[in-house]
Length: 369
Image (cartoon, rainbow, N blue to C red; front, side, top):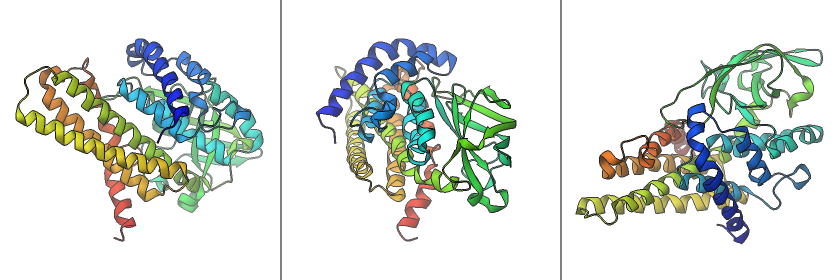
């Protein structure tokens, strides 16, 4: 899947993560998010410019394989940097696909350089996967929208300078009345709530947001009014593949760490059987990821195939983390243990981006049921 250009980029990313991120990471787990210096440095190295045209400061000749490299290298070091993937893999496509030329010139250089961090404001306290139940409203008032509502479980929510916000502009139309607004977080009426404590992913920013009589310029509308649902679903294949790649890389890292822990010790036959089973699972997942990644780069990955990849690899991550923690015993059941942290960090991958149950519905429908 990777050529010499990708491997050169991998060496740059690995050096950055090893020398600059690993020493700072425990502090981020305390504050609940990476430092601003992290974003600026990632921007300098081109990590935030993957897939972005060069005229806006993007990484030349880059595609989603470069993003996969970043994810693999982060997981190799047991670094949970999901907010980075939200910025590059999930939010950036909305600007690239639906922003006007004026909007691209206004926002992309800030996003690519790390001077602005972006979040996607979609989930609500009473509306998770059901976007029809969205309650956040945007009412047109001259050359502004007046926005009222709240969002929750928003990755990058505490650090964000920009939020791609899903709002109801035509409530009576259900999902066909959703629009996307880009909100500058210094706008009057924008509020941040609690920093949400999590079982794992301690260094990943997750927050509540609120909007009270918030006036957003009409010129901040992404694409067409009431086309937001179509825009949101169009990026789901890449979003779910991004999660699948992260889960696959995490499973590989956990297995490697377990083998390293057990090597040099006398191992029982059952231990060998468990390692063999995990190795077989991981290799199958790698084949699926490579095929899915090739399809995405070629523009051929559909929603059902992305659902297969997310379903298989996130469930794989859970199986491998559980079995390897069992093999490690009490040595693994500690917050300071990479295996213990990987166990907690990985559990939510079967929930966000569409739960395993939702993935099964999509896969079954594609199969004809």
